[in-house]
Image (tube, rainbow, N blue to C red; front, side, top):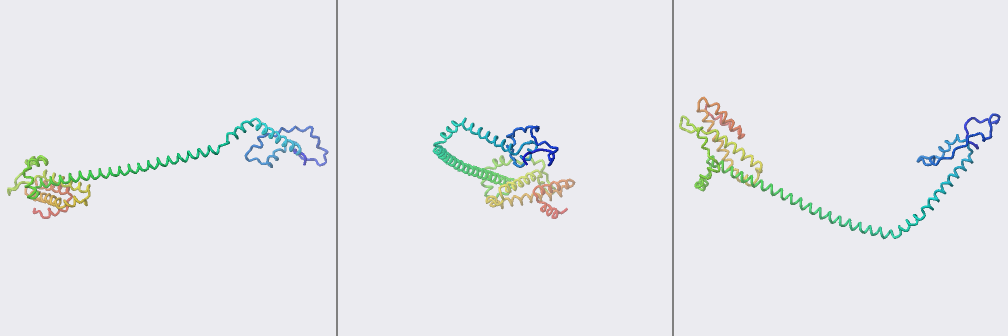
Length: 292
């Protein structure tokens, strides 16, 4: 087939004019047609069926387009020939420059690594110092708690009058000072009453203070740790303080049964003190032993 054309062909040639002079002249091929990323020659040729152009003319037009492109490329190279030459001259000796940059970069990397190692070493030192600071602060807090524990335990022993004879003799000359430190409980004298047998009624206000002080003493021991050597060494003293407070509570409960119409209110107050100490079992045992 020599020509691209639309329409049916008449093999006899009676109804079709073979003279192409009356056909429209095809437009030049566009460069943009070849720039598509998915350019396909077969698809391109199939799109030219309406050009009414012979295959030889199409080949000649493509050759002309190729030659034009080659001339443009050559002109571009000629115009920028000096730039190409200067670029080649600038690249001469580039190996030495690259090597110099490489040596400088390696030196910089070594310096950065040395600085990084120093920073890491200092960071570890700071972490160790901070951990040591926290440990010392914790030890200082424990020391303060131990001193507070010892002072409160001694205060309770003083108030409950359960110090042994040697301790009492050693502090006999300091009784006035102790009164100032631990405070006077003379304000409870208004509550003191005598029972029928001449015994003095136990002050519930004083007992309540003793209960709260004992509970706070136990809370300090729990905060320090009940397995701490000092806490373990003072266990006997604390047990004696506890038994003395429970004895006073039992005495107050027995006395409540002897005061007539105030018995129930006073009994409930004493049971509340048992509850403050967490000694519900001891309260039940005391009630069972109470003769009503």
